[in-house]
Image 1: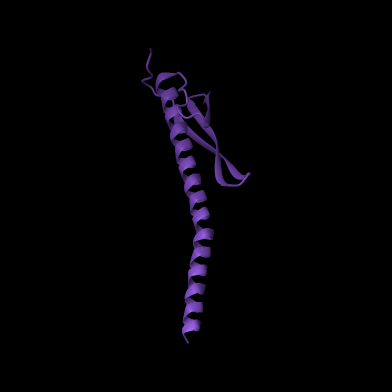
Image 2 (image 1 turned 180 degrees about the vertical axis):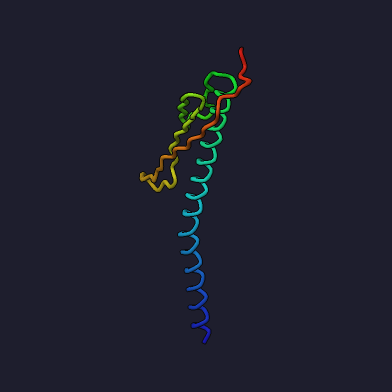
Length: 113
C-alpha cells in the first residue's frame, strides 16, 4: 500500500514538472509578443503624431524598431517594423516580425518652427 502511494506521489510530481516545462515557454513567448506589439504600436503612434503636429520625422528611441512615416494628402501614416525572438533554445530561435500602422490627420495648428 505504501509503495502505491509513493508511486502515485512521484507520478504527480513528474506530471506537474512536465506541465510547467510545457506551459512556461508558451507563456513567455506570448508575453514577449504582446510586449513587442505594444512597443511598436506606441512608437508608430508617437511618430505619426509628431509628424502631424510638427512636420518633421521623429527619430526612433528603440533601435529594435524601424519606423517608416509617409504623408498622403492630409493623412500621416506611420508604420513600425520590429523583430522579436519568442523562444531561444540552444542555437535555434523562433522569431516573428511585427508590423503596426497608425494613421492621423495633419493638425490644423501645425507648428511653424
